[in-house]
Image (tube, rainbow, N blue to C red; front, side, top):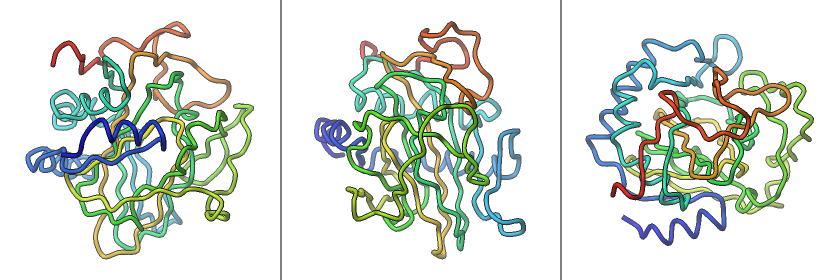
Length: 266
């Protein structure tokens, strides 16, 4: 396993880092089985993206609330510890999980975006762990605009299903990254099962379609550190899917937002 200090430095500088071989075969098998269950029993927030009849990009949220397999991963896998250590936090609190499956031949891009403007969350210690259970070469894996988490700007989210902008946020539109890729430091890695990418909530990222023969199944788990707070923004908000009974500025806590890892416990 690569040195965590080096990964943390890359995360701080670029907004994203890759960790190699940090999830063993037993965790990958559990996630594969959990994904199979989720595809057979989609939840209330599931969506299929793309033109009618050609929806080859599937997403779902909050699987851990209805699946013991996803819950086991959240509570017992290395994910919480890795998130906490990379964020430089003494705790890692779970926000939500997200499933992203691109079937072979999918042309649907994951649009360039920042995560945090979709969420009612403030703070710098906010991260995601992107864990594929299939080979994800860099031409189909998640890509990042290096250093964009330091731009100091939040940009308006858009709906993945149809590209329409969120309403009432007052945020500006994100620059057209794809049209001007040569202007940016685009980071991408070949990611194998067992590897994961950890990235900060404000880094700009997106992903190509999946024209290859193999599936691209990914579990993303979202984590909050010591400085993260509930902060309901103006206008539309996607996450949490049910707004919590928390005062503005409060830390996330309670059964829906378990603190899974504490540095003092290791």
